[in-house]
Amino acid sequence: MLRLYGNNLKSALESAVRFQSTGHKFQTKEEKKDGTTYVSMERVSDSRGARKEEELCSLCTCNVPVKLSYKDVLILEQFMRDDGTVLPRQLTGLCKKQQLRMERCVMQAYWSGLFGEKFGTEADRAGYKRFNRYWKHDMSMYQLETKERHGTWFYIKRYQTKNQPLFKNPLN
Amino acid sequence: MSQFWTKIRYGVRWNPSERLALATRALNLQKVKSIDISMDPLHHDNLSIRTFWHSIMAPKVRLTNPNVRVKTDIRNDRKAPFFVATLDDGQKLHFNTENMTAMDLIMNFNRLTGQPEIGKAGTRPRTKI
Image 1 (spheres, rainbow over the protein chains, first blue to last red):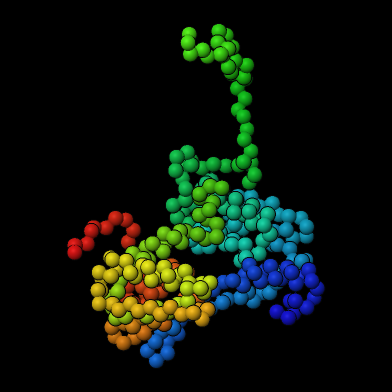
Image 2 (cartoon, each protein chain N blue to C red):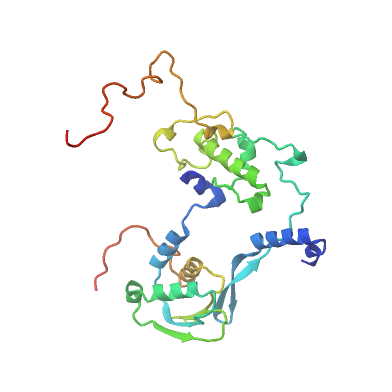
């Protein structure tokens, strides 16, 4: 820890933050001593030390962020466990933005059926989700688009305009 | 954020509170002779041992072995809480419950007393008294 806190104040603060995020992890320790089993929690610390400022995440290399899409299944699988869940940011070493994108892409890859049977079929495919869905890119999932129907009065005659009482009078 | 997303991220496939409830369900004191709980009520980390204490005093758990002697020692020294469980075969389990969640505690206790770690989910028939 001396090495980490020795440089300057800023890096010390950062490493403190990292220490906080990774230092409060505990593991069950069990040892047997003459007929008694001692069970306690043992602190596990991160051996990599603090993250440095110039450290870039593996998808933001050379200041040109790689645009991950849900079709890059082989890349996505490297960030996943065997049971089909996503590794946390402490383990993947990605920045916040890329981690969110990666998680979104994994979700979309499930819904477009690109993982196949590999991670089981218990993914959320209820209702309309039973059909595979495809997107242009990962953010287009959130962009709502209106369907244009040409040759209809739908956009013009949306509300009734004729013979509507202005106020509802309960006495009449 | 959809439910599905919360499920795949951080590898969370189970609910901790649900897991605790199932572990509490699997509690069985058949092989336990006595439990000596020792805790400081003013220590900052004694929730897990209090949860454990509460769950072993539940009537359904007590009925699994009415002869279990539960003794408590309330201290005033701000030291970490612990309990010692004496088993039928003379073995002792010493749990230092600092930094341990109640779920971990009860699951480890179940495992070391030779019970399944988590019980079955769903309704169960009423025990006949």
